[in-house]
Image (tube, rainbow, N blue to C red; front, side, top):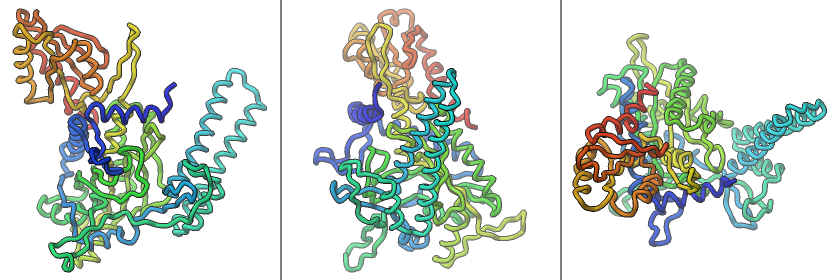
Length: 513
């Protein structure tokens, strides 16, 4: 059985080999935790972005989209709390000289204990037919013991974070006997906070330049434009503002491929509501966002909700939609009830009112906000990880297939002439010219048709279309389905409608409308 770490290595290798992701500046030995998206990766990433954007903006009459600048006035980040509070608790191992996020070490330790509980439950289930009361009590006792450990650690950890007690955070690591993954030792330094924002200078002369920051999130660009959008769009509460774009964080412990990067892309929506209605909208957006993920056809077992142990300074409720990556369940999307913190802070620091007049209540107030925030790069990784498969075929051969949701696939169809002569390439060219206005399609005439199938399987192309000598007379082609590998003879003039049924983004959006 292939281990998760091996699957992850295969995924990273596959992503490079087939033009999805490259190490940034690779010819100069690369730049740590920064990646470039190749020709297929850029298309897949754009399709994911379009799925999110259309589901948010196109399907909701009360949600609009903006594109705010990366550079913002530095007071923005003072008001938002990022200057004073946007930091990670870091700890070093003195033997390996490696640095870790202290909170991640503790969370991974808790996850290992949860794994022990799952194993105990699995063992009990296998032995259920030969039920033994003594065995049942023994298993139950171990499960309760493990669960108590988890509860105790979480309670201590939450209390330490709320009090910003870094000494207690280290003590939890010591008491849990957490070891360095590299050295295996418990020789830890004290825990320190490290601010994650990148700073730079704005201005042509260094002496006159002012310090500004690369935005660590896209949300603040929405908040500072709240009144601009509300007034120009004549928006009424409740309404949302959506945005996609780059954000930057000086991650000291950047790892796990594109899961945690220093330059990444977010897809965020801030939903402005009446104070007092946040619980209702929070629950609604949790359900809505999980439905968006499920519509892709990925196993529901891959997703779970995880409530935050410590709430961010702006939140009165928060949870993550976690996804089971090859390295375990990790955050994919966050849903936060941000109260009125952000708009109130910007009102205070800017001196300009950030209030909305509600004609139904005949009063003005600062709206509360429900946020949905998903990392586009993490979504990319989740889709790739759940799609990459090695299959054994009936004839004993094997194939590597990227079973991407067809609507998100970089290339929708590949057109092959059986041979490079006899007028077959010309027919293939006509098919491409007919389809390319609606879909990304490609042409391939190199190697046997079987090898061409394998290349397209590896990049996730849903359909392969082969033009043969019979096509000259019957005006039909052979279309092959990526997932079933079934081949069917169809009329050339039917191709567009056949492809449309499987790859249209509209068909995906209708599942969640």
